[in-house]
Structures are given as C-alpha cells and as structure tokens.
Length: 127
Image 1 (cartoon, rainbow, N blue to C red):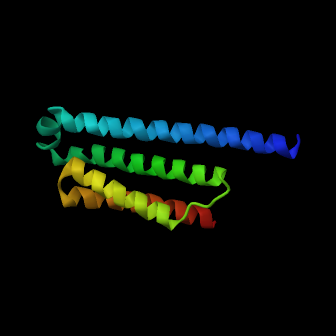
Image 2 (cartoon, one colour):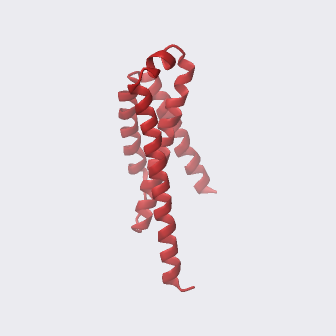
Image 3 (cartoon, rainbow, N blue to C red):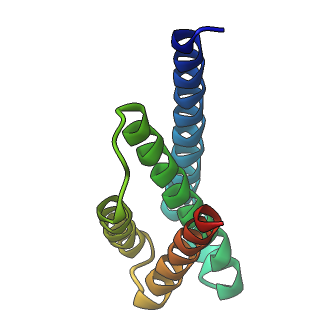
C-alpha cells in the first residue's frame, strides 16, 4: 500500500472517530437536558441526591467525547491539541454544569470527574 493510501485510510478512521465521539457527546447532553426539563428531575433526582451521579457522569462523558473530537480534529490538521483546549473545554463544561445543576457542589464533582479523565489520558500517553 502506498503512503498516500495509508494517509487516506488514517483520515477516514479519524473522521469515523470524530463522528462517533460527537454522536456520543450529543446523546449524553440531550439526555441530561431532557432529564432537567422534565418532572423527573424534581421527583427523582431532587428527592434522592444519590441519583445525581447519573447526570454528572453523563456530563463527564460529554466532556470526554468533545475533548477526543477536538484532539482528533487538531491531529487531522497536523496540529497538536494542547492544554489550552483542555482547560477551555473544562471552563465551558463548568458553566454548562452550573446551568444544569445550579449548585457548586455538583459542578465541582463534574469538574473533578473531567480532571480525572484528563489525568488518565495524560498518564496513558506517557507510558
């Protein structure tokens, strides 16, 4: 296989990865928005705070999927996704989490989950 064919295959795989991650992010955020806008939020999640872990995990999945999509898009353009992307997306995630939850405790837990994902990826890339 020629070098051009390899690059073309790699590009198609990256596009598939971006599409999959974007789909996962959209589904996760739509589920959280749906839960927030319906009466399920007040009847289930407010009465049993332990169940709030579900929307927090979905927001962390949203962050992870968007971060992977941005990194793959940068790599397709032969750039490198850096800490600016990670931190700016985390700020956007924090604002979005505050709009959803309205409580700094839950926002802090979402940011902690996002930071754990970033730490995992950082340590995985080092080895």
